[in-house]
Image (cartoon, rainbow, N blue to C red):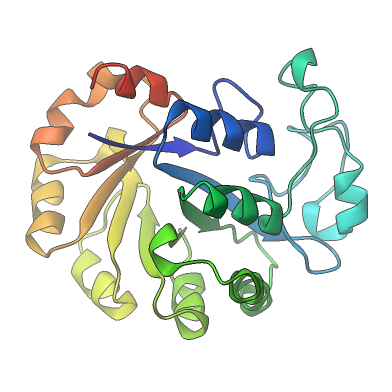
Length: 239
């Protein structure tokens, strides 16, 4: 049973923060999923939403705020007073933490309307090359196929996973063009037929974000390889 901690251990600590990463590492998770987008000064930052409104005490779009402005925000108090002062991490901070612990990282390239895909991929690749992160400790994922094609040009040896809510009928063509490693889909819309079709083609199959193990018991029998969840303890405790 393989599990990825979604945005870190996001049911125990504020999502996409170093605190959430540390909780996942301490619990024994082998994989962590994060979201990456650029600040106004083109620093890869780990945050999911287009704006900082939901998960910090600030307001505004991530791409309009500098790294310094983003780092000054409190990204923990919204979750619990125990995380008062927790900050929005840079990709560099997360990579240093997870690589030292030998934890694999699923890096979702977040593409919002108006974002420059090429610049995001360039800056992410620069950071990974700077830190000399082992390819086997990384996987890129995105809902945007062009982002995966672009990161493939920069880091061809790092695995790529196509994110879909529902797996489309032309999945074989898309995955072939990407030279993909995995398919990531919403567990609620996965069918046994589509699961077996993906597995027949030789790809890994991951599902997001089932937080109750009993909801996906049957999906394991369809060939699903990993669940991406906010509640890894509910799965790992039963191993």
